[in-house]
Length: 70
Image (tube, rainbow, N blue to C red; front, side, top):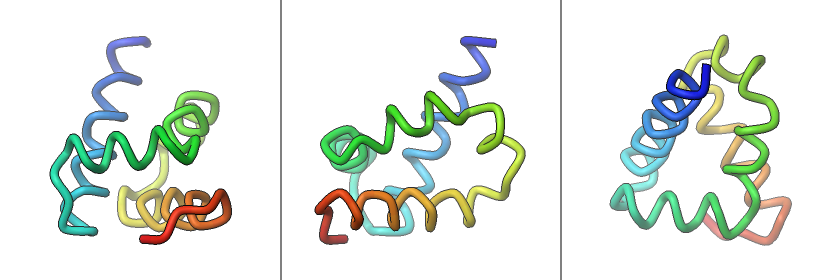
């Protein structure tokens, strides 16, 4: 299961980066800074069943709530 979770997080970071025109590294740092990677790790069991588009929006909303400005 750990391998699946890692693959999911990498794919989500990539989708987030593409959507916000960031590099993967920038997206990962942003998501980490505002706690989104911890959120994704904690709620992987639900998140991986949802469309990436919806999860990118949910992660962005979470980051905005935590002070992010994208």
